[in-house]
Amino acid sequence: MIKSELIAKLAMENPHLTQKDVERVVSVIFDRMANALVQGGRVELRGFGAFSVRARPARAGRNPRTGESVAVRAKAVPFFKSGKELRERLNLGGDA
Image (cartoon, rainbow, N blue to C red; front, top):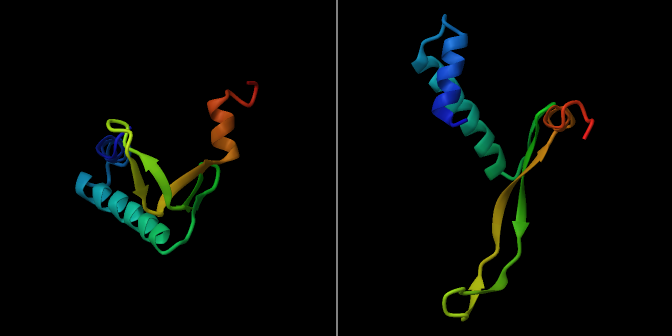
């Protein structure tokens, strides 16, 4: 599902809200989540999962085309850990 599909589904399920209002709400939620991560925080949605930021150290990489060694800078990357309820739903109640 992409963001526009999410907005359309939420607007359909909430006819008292306009599509523009739903779009604004979804954008605000995503912006707040991103800002929390940028500030080094963590975003936890109970039952769904938690978003956090992990640091990747600098390393020596390799250009696959030339085989030449290149320096790869340290960076921060987003990390998602699914919640127990989501894992259970994906595995049909935990049978698998």
